[in-house]
Structure formats: structure tokens, C-alpha cells
Image (tube, rainbow, N blue to C red; front, side):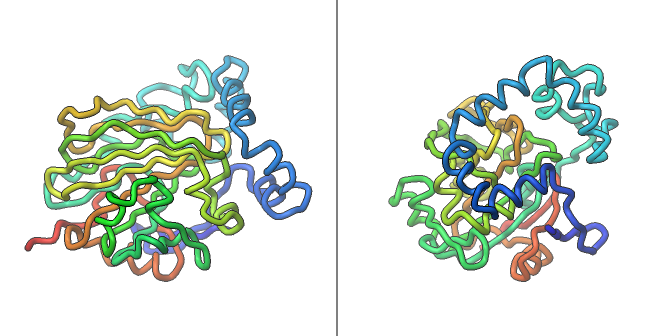
Length: 297
């Protein structure tokens, strides 16, 4: 059972997990773990399933998915009968008014919908994956010179589950570098998997870029793929000015994760998010929602 904190109701809620029984079996049973290592974590498995989700045959999955997970289609630009396949639905765009953005330049916003962990005063060699399992920023991006500049700063981990809006956006105006691709496996990023696979984020397929933010300095942006995520699509124009809230890209089918690193003495994260992280709970947030404030020096 996965619990997260709803900051609107100030209560804990239980996440309804797509493929819950399959995930538990896959990451806990001897047979499931064998299949995971031999086939499921491989690119071929995600590529084949991604191909199915791109085909017209997958359109029949849409209505049942909407019903099972109570997706509010009133927020979407398209109606549920207007999608060509399941991935078309999965990367659905929302109406602009569905995700209002805090335009105050001093306010840090969430880059997407999901469940957020926030860690301050981080040790670059011991970033928390889950309690008892850590990884390093150097391993994650493969650049120690850049990684060392973020020691003592912030690490924000936003987990997108399959039911979430799967486009991610810029947290501020600025200029973003080209996205650097790092090949890897396709483990699930669900907490069930995070508790079982050491250094999972450093093993999975991922992309990272350096975002020169106008108000929050140089921010490292990382997108991590997962099982059945055959594509991390970057839709922004590298090395050109973007505005706060502009789309950076999207994930195709599957749960995925975005990770941000911010230098020390730049941003103060909201107390409720830090508190829940310290207690081991993610906080549910949506794209454009305020999650922190610039530190005035």
C-alpha cells in the first residue's frame, strides 16, 4: 500500500496503482525477479509494448483506464473518443486553465503532476532513493565537475504514476541546454521497485540538461524512463529562451520520474513538503503549483 500526503485536504491518501499485483509479484517473487532481469527490464520489452500502445488496437484500453482511475476528462483538450491510440491519450494535453501557473518570479513551481519528495542540504554522494538505499549525482549524470557544485543544495524527486498528466514543464524562464542521453534499463519507478533495486535511477534510461534559470540559477533537470516507457520526448528548443510554464517534453506510457537539483542558498521548499519527506511520505502536487520560494540574500 502506497500512501501520499494531499496538501489540500491535509490528509493521507492511498494511491491506486496500475498493475499493483503484477508489480508486487514481479519485484518480490523469485520467478518474477528472474523474468525482470532476463526480459522485462530490457529495452525490447518496453519497445514492443510501446509499439502496441502506438497502434490503433490499443484504443480499446482508453475507456476502461479512464473509468478505473477516475480521470477527469473535462480538463483535457480532446474528448475521450478523439484519441487515435492509448499513447495519444496518455500524453494528452490539458486545457490551459486546468493548470494555473504562479507567475510570481520568486515562487518555484512544480514541473509536472505527481508525488514529490524534497531533500535539502544534500550530500551528493548519498542521495536518498528510499530509506536505506542511496545513489550519487555523479553516477546519475556522469559529470563530477557539475555534480560537485550542488553539494548542500536541493534535490526534488517528482514521481509520475501512469494515471498522471505526463507532460513536464519549465519551472522558470531561462535557457536550457541540449538534453544528454544516458542509456540504461527499464525498471519500474514505483516505490515497490525503488525498495528492491539499488541505485535504480542510475541504472535506468535517462536524460539530463542544464537549465540556466533567470531566478533560481543553474538547475540540473533529469528525466528518468521506466518499464514500458519507450520514449522520453523533448519538445523544447535547446539554447533558446523559454518562459515559465512552457512545455519541456513528455513521457509515453508508464510511470516516470523527473529529478531537479538546485544549488545551495537558492530556494526554500515549503515546510509541509519537507515535513512529509522527512516522515517518508510523498506530497501530491500538480504542474504550476507553488512548492517553494526564492531565498533573498
